[in-house]
Image 1: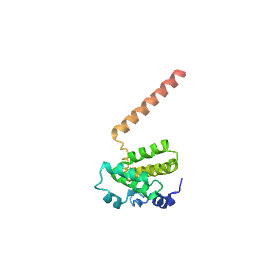
Image 2: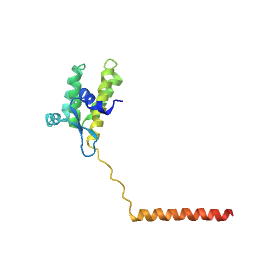
Image 3: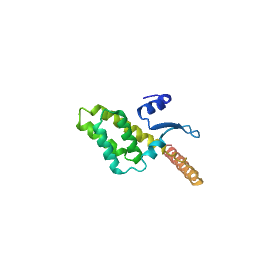
Image 4: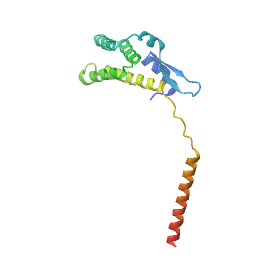
Length: 154
C-alpha cells in the first residue's frame, strides 16, 4: 500500500484525468474528476461507450486509449459497464488478461475516487434528556437486581 504522501503522484501517473485536492476544512484527501474530462464528454450518449470500447479493442496495447475509455465511462457514470467489460476480457482472453487486470484496478481506483469525492460525514449522535433518563433507569434496575441477588445469597 503506498504512503499518503506518494498518492498524488501515483494517482496522476496511473490515471491522469484525476487530480488530488486537499480540503482545508477537514484536511481529507479526495479525488475529483478533472473539469476538462467533464466538459469534453458532456454531450456523450450511451452508444459512445460501445464505440469507445470497440476503438479500444482495436488499439489494445495503447495505454492512453485505456485511460480515455475509463475517463469517458467515469464522466458518463458508466464505470460499472467498464468494469464488466474488463472482467469479461480477464475471463475469456488469456493474451490480454494482464492489461485487462491492470485497467480493472484503474476502474476500481476511479470508482473509489468518485465515492470519496461525494462522501459526506455522518452527524454525531445527540443525546437528549430521554436518553439520560433511560440510562438512569437502566442503572437503577441493574443496581436493584444486584441488591436482590446479594440479599438472596445471605
